[in-house]
Image (cartoon, rainbow, N blue to C red; front, side, top):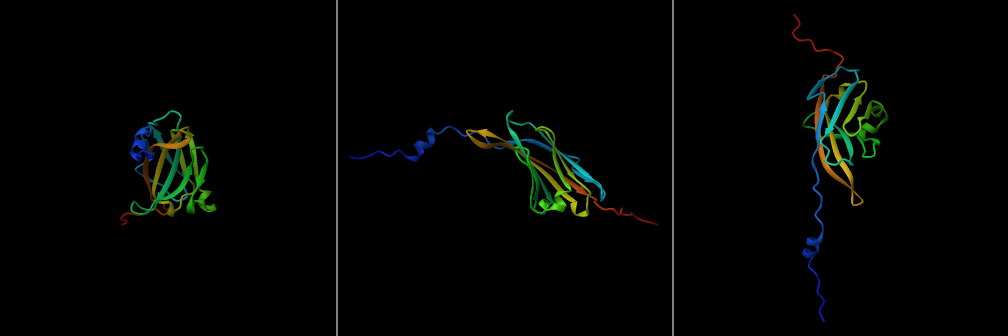
Length: 165
């Protein structure tokens, strides 16, 4: 007596097709691409999101920082899909955390990052990365991603004199 065992390929053919994942969201950061501030000022960076793929989806918004375009990006702060704000790495320490604010200005379309009382160490590249997420078959599924960046520079309380005579 022999038992027939179906090949793995025949099982895969019967599975339903997976949804298309990770198309691009339209994400822009303003002001940009370069913005100048003075030490001690408060900076506001806006992350605009458009072209969501699904009406019922939620967004996870992450802000990253890098001292230069060549250096490693560090996750600063995240607003989860459930709109909870979480701080990461050095940015979770009390002194830095008190200087960062991430707020949802317009639901699902506009997020504001405030960096309070700017210091020279705040000069660098700020990147907003957004992921669109919704429930699909009782699992959270990412439908699309997008990112945009700006550079903050000139964070100094001492203006540079050019060619004094």
